[in-house]
Length: 570
Image (cartoon, rainbow, N blue to C red; front, side, top):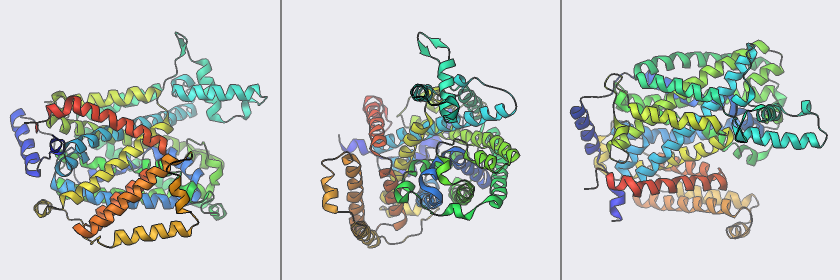
């Protein structure tokens, strides 16, 4: 019984099942994507909400040093990209990390991973839709069109702003002296129509853009590809303008101190920076629509990560060079804000318009990814058969696409951006950890290594992992941390949950050091696993708690439906 939870699908079985389904149903997906198209999809997904919104608060927390956090996170993504590329070249199926886990770690792990990919794509798209709404409304305001505040934000933010503003006004503060966010939230809640005593505050533009993008994804991959390519070219041109023009207004003194709030301030931005890289893995979900997935997907992943990391670092340095990092707290449109600060209102307007374009392309790519994962899970019997239905005319997963639109559009009406970003980031990092672990398991079988057309450069991890663990513990002790007192924090104190999470990380690090010696593991996947897991530890206990509840809900669904309906349950 226990072993049946970890039953696996062989690589040959996965590929033969796909060919059988296509021959029976007479439908296959349209192979239309090349390296350029895939790279543009990766850029579209990565350069999205973060560079136009979350980068501001991240810079406020960590200062110019956040640029180094982007590099560090990109390294983690690069290690992970090697693992994704290894799987994509071996299993050219649309299921992405879900399919990879099914071949290496077993069914229940694959289900949990697929369940968390729902969290990554759907919740990420909610965040992008919310950011898109903010910039779109600002753009309309610049054109003289006013949208009522209660139609442009979520209920929770408006309610909090109303409560905080009411308290401030009662204590004698002037309304005009309050922040823009508080004033807008207060106005939204106060002016909203009431339904049975409940103030109707909802983000209508976020819903409308989700409906429009879902329709575009529904009618075909070729239309989606062409639209995305145009949007990405426009987006890259605008970012080059931001960097090129902004560089002339940089004051080098603003980069000192480089990390004004220390390493803790930099790490406080982990969720926002990780969110910036969400989506590079979406390239692998289009494997069945690629002309040559085994060759093109690995290349596109690497190209997209390199391009986007360079842009993130340059934009962060320009932003913090123009605006002191402490002045960026709470700014939702930091790039437009920095040009207004130096009197370039025209450039600020261009940035606001380009943000709408950039976020539209990110929304498009995320909305492409989720239905294709659901389609693959349905083929395996873990979801109802309707999710794998291919439209006879458009050759897209029709029902899955519609359901994705519903699960993004409805939450986008009421969700809070900050909460969404944190929850999405931890789910994504979990997927990255399992993909890296899956490669390590897959490569224990020499036969699997022969089937792949992409090889991860092999570096023997035997001693590097153990030595790095000893070095890390030594540096922690040298920095003044009392290990005995820290261990006592596992049982008492407000931060015991955080201590427990970090303790678990070091235990896993020690286990990986042991297996690196006994199994001669490859260093790159091991580094990918450990770095992504470390980033997960920095998400905080609250996010971990929510993440565990989400996984628990997935386990309940698995045992209630998926385990019994699985095609391997024979």
